Length: 394
Ligand SMILES: *Cc1c(COP(=O)(O)O)cnc(C)c1O
Image 1: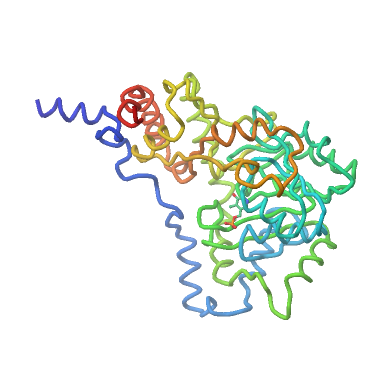
Image 2 (image 1 turned 135 degrees about the vertical axis):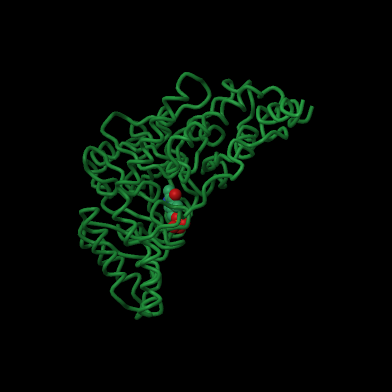
């Protein structure tokens, strides 16, 4: 009798009072890392943590420049600031137009406003849910001063195509690789397709020091313009010695860990593939090697008995799996006088309600965790009707 009760509890979804698939919840991030431990101990022993200028920031820039194969690496205080500096670096000024996707990190839009330029929003590709290159030419005017592309949720903007279009018109490209350090496109690192690219060391990111960022560019004129803006007798947006010392050793592990994450996602998607409802964002072709910060899926409620995305997410979170929404469509959260819509932004509106993301820490947990994610998804699918009748108000 008792056994039967337990069995039923194990079967039931956690959102209906059953036992979660991962009672311990999602893995914490950042993980404990011996190399980071050593770096922090070294900061303590040497007093380097307290210095304005030391060897750690230059060392990080040198390592990043080598890893990324880029001439100039300029450290700064966040990825958000890095985007602003990149815009200033390519000379964006008042009344200029900056093209970006209608679905992007909110601060990217705000940064365009911050430099008094006008965001011009372009729709997403229906399969990749990244900026649609086919729609790009249409958005270009003689006031276009930059194209800002963000590779989001493990997907890719087709950067070589963007490059081609931008080069025809002499427009600089800013590449946001905050979500995909180490990813490759056609054998070249993400970040090397833009005139300038930006990295974040924010607390949830693949390279992390809690805060921090960097701008990378091969263009000396861009680097000089940014340096002039940032240096006011003192650095206005500094990265600290401690932050740099903590990020440095993570670069050595990045390729290996990105490989582990990819393997996880490949196995996960192959196990989910027979079912409808969760389709991982597609890449334009096989020449893209992703780095997963979030794994993006197109959520199809029909695959889960029409369960709304929000309830699916709540159900999976109750199981201890870190699914979440993506971003909001930029056109849906900003007054229309703030931007120009280059087209109808149909896919950006779809992504606003249909993007599903899985946060990356679980991707390093190995084969058992793959089965846990699959088990949790299948449990919620199986109980979709009961979950809805309990949790949706009649
Ligand atoms: C995280 C992120 C940034 C910048 O983040 P910060 O927290 O300011 O370092 C910029 N763009 C994208 C796409 C991001 O995901």
